[in-house]
Image (cartoon, rainbow, N blue to C red; front, side, top):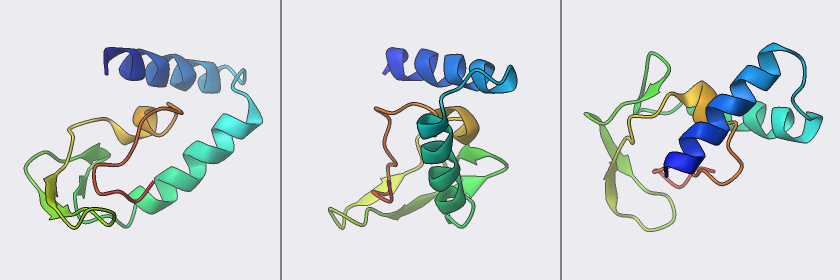
Length: 84
């Protein structure tokens, strides 16, 4: 998990300097468009105080607490609601 956080922030910084590869940028853009409409999103965070149903397992899940702009940039990360 810590590696995912580090990788997401590293890619965030790469993106700010125009060094992020197009495939990762495209993936993150798609993920964030999904996050923007999510009920557990709150001010750019996957809010751990909110709950929803995971689309794949039908289990009730909470937000993970991650900064979405960086989480979306980590290829190995996943949505706790099973949306990506």
